Amino acid sequence: MHDERTLTKTWLILGIIGIAALVGAGVAWQQAQRDLAPVAGMQAWASLGGPIHLTSSEGDFRLSEVSMGQAATVAEATPVVALYFGYTQCPDVCPMTLAALRQVMAELPPATAARVVPVMISLDPERDTPARLAEYTGHFGPRFIGVTGSDESLAEIARRYGVSYRRVEAPDSALGYTIDHGAALYLVSSEGRIYDRIPFSPGAAGIRAGLTRVLNETHE
Image (tube, rainbow, N blue to C red; front, side, top):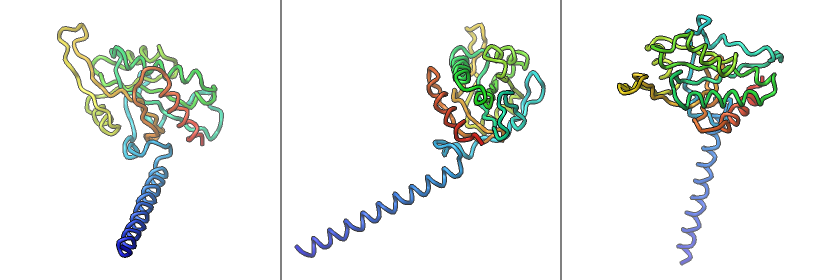
């Protein structure tokens, strides 16, 4: 009996040590991931993103050359690009997301809101010319930018950002076809580093929480 109690106690101690080691390893891994990604929660997306070079109504658009609003007067301020993949004929999630982003930006202090650069990438270059995109994004605010490109360049960028989309023929519709696409909003740096990916949800709460967190953690 004594030997059994001793053996049980030994295994219990070893089990506790093993659990502690696993927990310690998990904490260390999470810390390492936080060091790689500047914003908590972005570990799974840290390896995605990258540069973007497309076309807007103003000509070439490069993510690395985005400009903040004039109210961003702090010298150390850095832009946060709110990047959305969609198309102008989208009946619901695209206008809902851009309207929610506009609402959140209006709630922010002017100098903070000026750091946000809202960009919509159209996945429908056949219909969404740069002029059409400028008209569409203009409904949400003068700082909203609409860009697009060739099918090949869009597919390559979407792959790097983990965005799935496909054209769906709709012969019985006046539109002729629609675009099924992922509806997340990406918050990225001008170098294309993804800070956060905000899944679509009705209302502005998700965008407000994500954008506020990223702005606070990338203020310098």
